[in-house]
Image 1: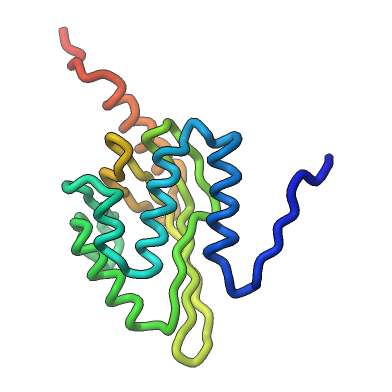
Image 2: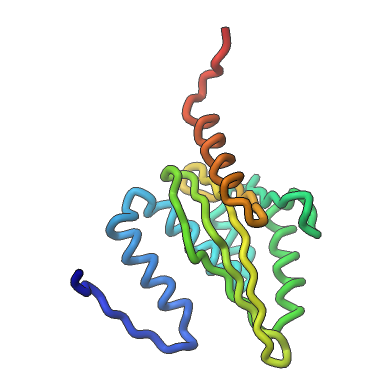
Length: 174
């Protein structure tokens, strides 16, 4: 019931406030997820400035972005293809900001999160949208991101299935 932190940030400095929120979480109750948590923060920062080289530094070379068939995009994209799509989207608005409003770490190498996007059009109109993502990491680097439209039950089931599949390197058979 006591306030232990009160931070104030300029209203147009979302990035600094978001980074501070992540820093505090990953240094305390999220410490078990700090390595991949910072990888994710760095990836989001790269997305927001459309820096594919910065993203490449925190991703496996084989990293893939997987989208459901219902989206109007290619179902499986490489990092370069994904960033080309981000650049196309960014050209349609005057600003865009990607962030996670909620995240649940299934393990230190897998999360389920609600990814939000805030965009401002050329005439100041505001756009928002959200998706659910399951991200996986290998050796501290992002290895895949699987997008779900709004079915969080499917996202959690997928994440749990992926964690069971990677729990053992030995095949189970009779």
